[in-house]
Length: 181
Figure 1 (cartoon, rainbow, N blue to C red):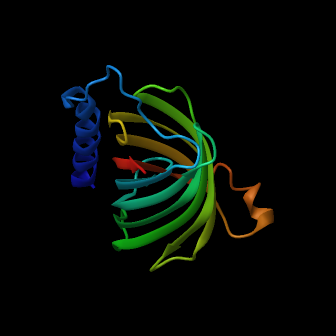
Figure 2 (figure 1 turned 90 degrees about the vertical axis):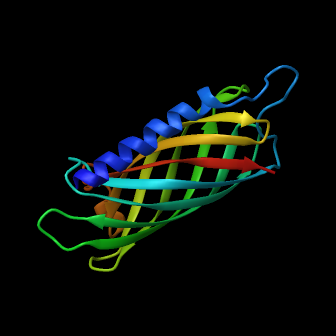
Figure 3 (figure 1 turned 135 degrees about the vertical axis):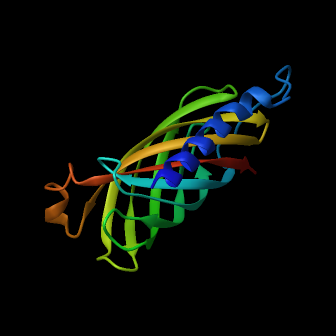
């Protein structure tokens, strides 16, 4: 578990330094997408329980479509391998639909959003997931950005259990790069 925490810290620190190291010129350039554009992102991903005792690392890919200059809807696919205290190592996958609202029109664009999907495991019961997310994109080139996102997802196995499980969930986070086209 210590190695997981060290790798997570290194990935997050590297992602925060990328904008400072970029040589993107801001004068007379338009950054970011327009309505109708698409977006592809690949990220390193992590997840942990709400107490941050157990966690996993993996990869996440997403494809989105801009409904307006600031609203994007899309689908994410993730796969992770994890280590559990007093248990066996495990893998998990997620498939989620999402919608995000981005603030601003500059190189730095914070965003908020929501998602709904399913988590599936090799040694546990599959479950529905729904959550809120926040993050930021920083455009290093007019169509290329680095992104960091965190979300809290609560887990449920039926519609009636969703309202009872809002405090039973997991933290998911990603750091990666993306491209608008």
